[in-house]
Length: 284
Ligand SMILES: [Zn+2]
Ligand SMILES: [Zn+2]
Image 1 (spheres, rainbow, N blue to C red):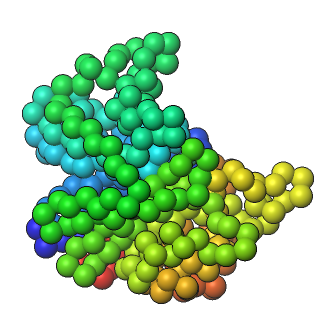
Image 2: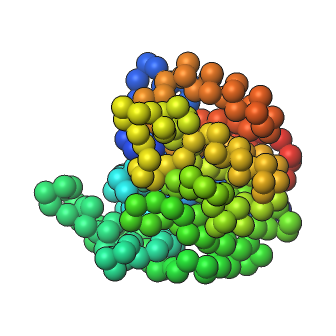
Image 3: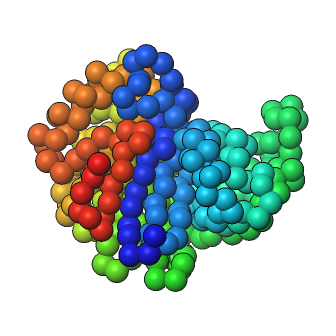
């Protein structure tokens, strides 16, 4: 679809999938967001939402897409071994990520995830054309007119945030990241500056984050209150709260959404199936 910039959410949770009767409306799958930009298909993270996205692609095969991983914690890679189009010859996928601090490439980490005793079939069984790219912080990936910028996030074991730009429109994917106690994160501010859409890690509330009995300080995630500080300072047009904690059920998230909207009117909660069309300036 040339001349369009569309975002679709396939998995919006952090940590672990949490299907069940209390998470029906926001969804229980872990992180996976698709952006269709000027005919290019970009996929951010391969949490369990990637399995559902893959099913939707089967009828369109042969397909090609670019997969950008923020990092390789389980909730961001567990859908990959169940991504059906990767098993089918004729499909093409370019896969981008930072090497981990111990030097392991994304190819190695996705490969290791599928080894015995963790999984029955190895990555080599995948018949699609898979190209792996190790990126560095600060790199910009160019796909025709579409550019994808990168920035370092504050997360145990490192993570990278992305900003997609095309013809003056922009959308950021910023998860997993923890705020700093004494200042706004300059990397996050710069990446999200005046962006049309910023999808951001809001795993916790401030109350949970600073809970004296079970503090979340140092766990690598942020709060919706901190995300709104970023949105205001960076003049973000629309903020999308993302990477919901698995303990936050539909009712809790409804309430959280109301609080966030009253503090920053252009904020919404990510939910499975949510679509945002930057070209139409509308959401469905
Ligand atoms: Zn995560
Ligand atoms: Zn993580």
